[in-house]
Amino acid sequence: MLARVVAGISAGHRDITPSTTLNILGESSASCLRAFNIIKTFFSTHINTSCPPAGQPTATTHPELLDPHELTPGIPASEYRARRNRLGQLLPPGGAAILPAAATTYMSGVIPWPYRQDPDFFYLTGLTQHGLAVLTAPGAGSSQDVRYTLFIDAPNTNRERWDGATVSREAAREVFGADEVFWMHEMPRKLQDLAKTTVPILYDTDRVGAYHHSALGIALRPALELPGRVAPLRPLLHSMRLIKSPAEAAMMRTSAAVASAAVRHCMAVTTPGTTEYGLAAAFEYGIKSAGAQRLAYPTVVAGGPDACTIHYGRNDKVLAGGQLVLMDAGAEFWGYVSDVTRTWPVGGAFSGPQRDVYAIVLEAHQRCLAACRPGSSIRELHALCVDILSEGLRELRLLPGASLAEIRSSLYREFFWHSLGHYLGLDTHDTHLVGHDRRLSEGMVITIEPGLYIPDLPQYGALRGIGVRIEDDVLVTAAGCRVLSDQAPVAVREVEELAGSAAAAQGTGSAGLMPQPPRSKVTPHRLFAQESLGLTAPAAAAAAAVAVADPSGARRQEVVKVLG
Image 1 (cartoon, rainbow, N blue to C red):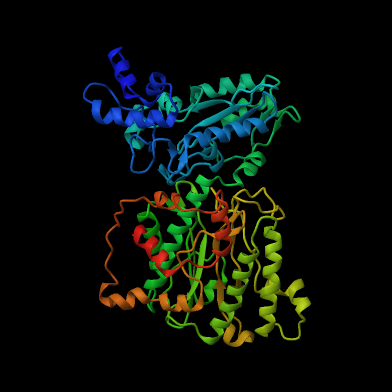
Image 2 (image 1 turned 90 degrees about the vertical axis):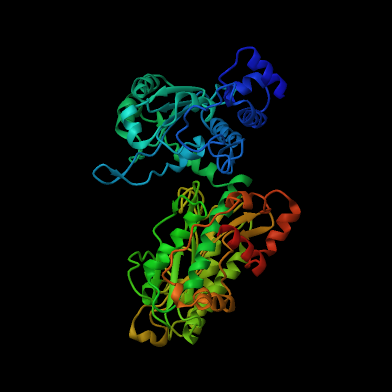
């Protein structure tokens, strides 16, 4: 293979990129990228091996993060291409799907929020920057691939001084696989021409946060004014994103493990006097030190009665001994998000009433995990959860005089008013167009999050103000399900042993020290890519049906150590 490259260099090839390596070798893209990296190592003094600017990490610029065949961490370029072709099969023959990237949002004046890509655009392109994708399906009876046209921003030296280089036209072709590349200023004319044809168009007019949304609306106006000419694209993409590939499942596992390991750390350092904002900061430090780009959503750290506020976000109080603290937090790891909740005693031991409420929620959590399998649905799991919580409410005597049937019918909503779970993926509430009656199938990821929230009112006596929720991220496998967020315990004894254990071991004198950022030779997604999640191997799937509880302490410690 390398001999052919050397022959190519002798024939005059001096600018060697992954694309030119492909032309010389005629091999698979993975083989070419491996060869390219070898060439870069040994022949860099004789040839130009610099890749065109991609505006984001690539296997060439970040070999510690991406393997040669990957377009984004953990996801191969071939998978993005397969997604586009699958969408092309769902489009009308010759139809065009138009999908813009997310626009930059601003916190104040010219100060931007950190950029987060539109998940649908990311799912099809792998780009984490501005752009517009147009996918054109082949005609009826054709076996050709979908045609991928990408519009990108033209080079702008002044802008690059502030924001850095963005994807180049060469990288759009060579790295991201576009068939045609145009500058963004060419977009209005190109789309106007498309809108004037009879080609069916799929485009979501309600993407108001999209890049150049107003210009898109104007360019497509000839088609938008004709009834039935433009149909929504989002329903097709949500149906595709609902089922995770093995590579996506590994990324979901990474995100959930990183988040639950950080929650475990927060449990271990909690003592009376710990602040809510301090735990929120510790969680964010933990996930970002492990490679996550951002929080999946604003972290909830709610002590005492504030745990009864689902989206409590102030995080401004000091935790007191005898309280419970509820943490609801998640990580976004290269697009894939997690959503984890744990509740634990600040002083290290549950009181009798706290233990009673926690035990009911834990039973609902465990029984719903056991019932989560292909063929069930979030709606059915929610009904099971309501039955268990209703029986618990009767045992707690919170609704004196009410029958079990009355509690199940509606009265339970005074103490549990959210759904048992939701779909999870590139968004926290992922693929929201898919209903909860949809039958679960292998490859889906959902949350299971039962809870009980006792209002802080005198009539509830010793139970007043107790809020408990336990939430895990769950991958549906052929044989049942697999808990992905298993680094933080849920069993009563394990929770009590863990709560405050790190602070007790280290003493109070070290509480104010900022730990050094961890250094790991193995990035987290590499670790979990080696783990069998039960999606392909029958034996692993059978084992996953049993593995709905926490893993052994030894395995958990191994993961926590690797994540720092």
